[in-house]
Image (cartoon, rainbow, N blue to C red; front, side, top):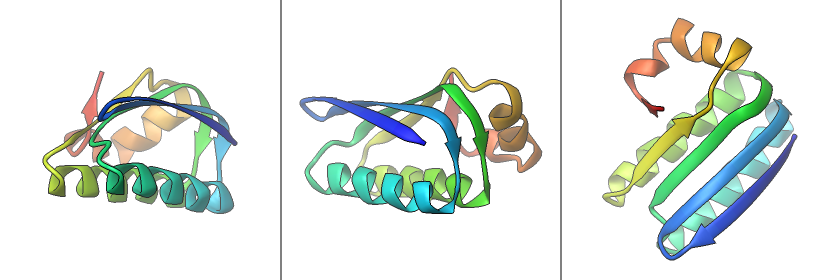
Length: 100
């Protein structure tokens, strides 16, 4: 998995590509937690190029969502489709996340 982060003030757009497995999820979590700790609390994660996400990847999104809320911020998932969207719905995380 590759991810790209574009930051502007306290806003960040994160683009995820390909697949997220355990090792990828850990790196993504570390990068996003560092951003949040630096005051970036409005995160938009673009999943339109993501083809697969495992449970550790979903866990990372849950953790990041929780941290942004603790900092009075917001996490929005955009462009979810295919298997990643199906997994989000099957795990009922569509009730937890803001999805556009």
